[in-house]
Length: 435
Image (cartoon, rainbow, N blue to C red):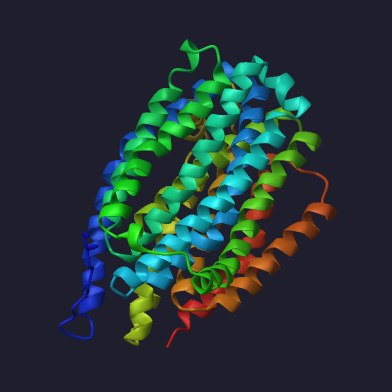
């Protein structure tokens, strides 16, 4: 029987384990940047092609279709950052194999139910079916492929969380980057492939495939999950710890996806397309940053155990400064903004200065929110995470019902301001007051 690899930290002093995490950060950032570079270029290149070949209304429909990825959120209750926190700082031996196996099985079940339900509802709806204009056979194939891609993506997310806890995440970053690059390259086939929606779903599947194959191999050989078992008590621990992060995810994902439908009904397809295009770039940057800086949670957890509050405050301030860099777009001349917008979005969308600035402001707020959540999880401040998440979601609901003059810029400004006031500021004060 093969034994799983054991990952141990043997500090020589009070700050040695944090030094190890510093080395891991450098390795993770380097591999993340390398793996993301080609994928970023190709994905950005695919946006103007999508707008050109799908048209404004088609691109808006595509953005509503991609909104289905929100159904991954419920599976995070068993495999999100809480799993990383639970596994961090311990050996990943056979005892932890039970935790990993329980997490993966429960995550798989939740993702299958959610993916199948959401996909069937969307693909069988009359409006969507009439819009995509596919044959019954292609419709069924598209549905099956999309469900598979969603389920595989969810399991890959759990694998990255496990690798992060083991300080081995740089390998999974490279496989994830390879998948992004291949998928982005496939999207360049828009003008050559008439069955556009089947191409989109195949692309979603291919994007996940390299990391998924790596995950299946590593989970069996390194962590010995074949020898693990599913335990009810572990499931309860994962559920109640992950439930708070799930509420946080919904407070972040639900508002921005609901605004797509509000914009579609109040402002029309043009503003929806602008909002979706800028939002897609913002979320891509967020996802890249989350992937690269994943080792933060175990580092924060160890810093708390070693009473290194100064390290936490400094790390958070550095992240705040990095998150604020998109606001530099406000200083660019109109001509530069127009030229870059033309390169990113083609001639199908008219992107103005205030679209870019409001989108940059939203991106800053989004990055700070996710880093704040990671710090709170590492600091075991789950109660504050819950209160701020519920507060920001409630504030969004009240604002959305009260204000009726929606446009793309007002949507970005509202989302960012609500998060800044009800989540980012309280979370930042708590983190910076760490003793």
